[in-house]
Length: 265
Image (cartoon, rainbow, N blue to C red; front, side, top):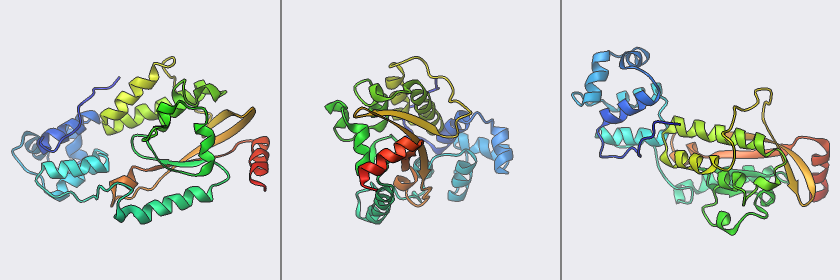
């Protein structure tokens, strides 16, 4: 489905990495030169190693090619420059305040489910209502790191309790495929290949649906939830930039009443 490439490592020349991103975006050297407002000759020299781009040029070309923040650091290092974006796990001291902010967002969303996942769909933080998604999942799926894409789509996870599994599956796999194609992340490619075998090749999402609706069977009650996604876009830290906050709200009156009774409202 994709022209897969192994992870971009620091020992590869910057020109080779830029050429790979250009081809992934299906852009010619001339088109890149026009969009970046530099000469095609300079692009050619950079890609062949005859010219070493400055920090500003690396970041400029990365902007044009929509290279993810983590990969921009790799481009900079490959060009002999220091990375400009911090790559710190969410549990490091510098990210504690950011982690607390995310947790406050999730807690404020209660009694409705809300969670935060990293770029690989691993669960980072969640509020207490997310337990309804994990109930009944195989122990293997609940061992850290908990991958929410696996939990949602594997037959030993949430999938049997989704009344509209085909719709949810098409939406999630389409989203995963898009993320894998845009990022070139091998883990996401492999995750897609792992999960797509549990059903037919997904079709395109229904364009009439503004947001994903989830029909969930929870302890004998059918709940209708709508899913929204928010990102931080924190360019100073790759961990935050790659974090996605998934929130769920009642999509019908009976579901709203269920959560109201459950929380005592």
